[in-house]
Image (cartoon, rainbow, N blue to C red; front, side):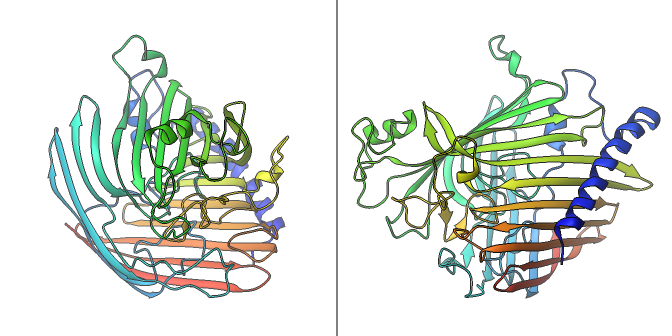
Length: 454
């Protein structure tokens, strides 16, 4: 069982690796492309992170078959399963990929299970079939209008995003995005450096109080300096059957006039439930894989700004070792808004709402951090990427509050692992491992998979 002392020891090891990696960058040259000037647009696009390694949001074209006793849906997916469930099949195929137009079709099905001993907040998802990865995009001048069924990972964290995570179910949505970070030609915007953005409007499944609410999301990420990335994110659950869905209500929500007791807002006409905040990633030294990062997401609003923050902070390092690229991180997450500085939020607020009784979820699964609200969790991770072998291991330990949504109160520990072998240019095989323990139960999962690349 991972203990707090072992997590602390691993954290000290990761910090030592950061220092060693920075020294190696100065003595032997950087493990990755160096930061040399303003033409670093591709650096951000290629930068390893959760969305490319632990919860892949844009997998390659292929057909994937998975079996075994995979993770239950009430197991936190710090590492997201390749097929999202116990076992099943997933397919993705790019029909057209032209400078002006993109069409990808994805579909799959999975057998899912729950432990039946999780808190009532977690129910069995109703949807076994999906169109994950499907997208239709019209590209124009660095941006694109799109309709898609895709997952998003907003933020620099490795174990999860506090607002919209790569392990969350895909949301069917329409919107506009700037998918690759590029500097703007406008002199008014050049100070932002390479920037990317996403604005979408989607609908949530699995809600019955009220039914069929919408989800609106907005994110902007900029890089004003070569070593610094800054991001702002905001999401809003809005409307639903039986609630007001006119433009006036939408405008109130977008302008922040949504707290009951102010501006004539009551429980009956409250526009929606919002989360918002910011994140950063500060590169340490010449190697882009060495960085200090964090995210703050507010569960409340005060003075037109987010308040009642949930918090994430982490340190990561990357270096080459013979023919392997090694990436390590240590990360801390506090998912209790009641812990925030000067917070007036009571326990049990994170990812819950009085209007939307199923909380901040899609088909009963969290849209935010995989461990749910009202937990504190420290994690240490190690990823090793070799020419034909990719491995990852994340060890976690923390505490669940009595109001935790996915754990029994008390100490919690977890281990997530993955292995991928490239058999040849057209085939991959792999395995995923999940193990979690709280004061009430132990949860285990093992998924084996095979993928034929197209």
